[in-house]
Length: 268
Image (cartoon, rainbow, N blue to C red):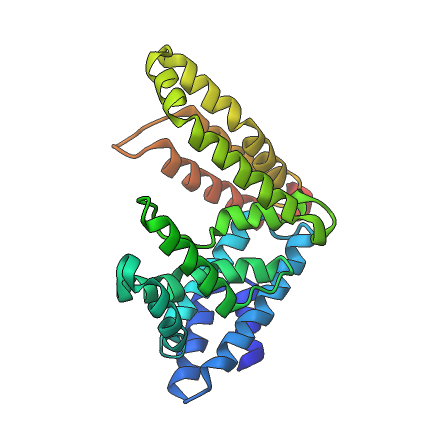
């Protein structure tokens, strides 16, 4: 059953994965066995990410699956919550501590695992706890690993050498500090700027993301037509029967995919 769980998670089959976890728990399996299987699956996900078979959305989905599985084996993780509670109870309460450990950290550490990094549970909890206590006096919120930021800073885009990718995290932190110091000036600039300027800047900032998304959806030959139709319908902004273009785009893409999949290869 452990091998089936590894395959289900790696193939993004959420329903089957959750059913297997529940079956293992009902059978009295050691929760650690479930977490080990999940860890193995995340290694497979990371390998597929390196091979460009999976992209950032798949990493996030896999992380969400790990979060749900962590919820299902919460009883084991509560032992770790005691360590966090001693350090963080003065900041935001026992419930939030347990929630942070069992929900957020499971997903975030899973994403780091898929990228080839081993994040120690105890050290990460203690470090983030001390940072939260230090920042609480200044009105700061809880400090925790950030799934998307961690994935960006630790992924291949941050450099081919895994041992040097920490530069990306440090650069991001320095950038955040600069932005924090200039927040008031930036807010004033936004208020006095013409309405269209901010929207234009935001649109330009998303061009790189859009280009990457288009490249990822158009590169595989299979399903390319459905991806194009989905993009065009969504971009059209059409609204019918009170339903937005995003919903119609998904429906149109599914129809095109179903039609083309059912055709013989020679007719496509």
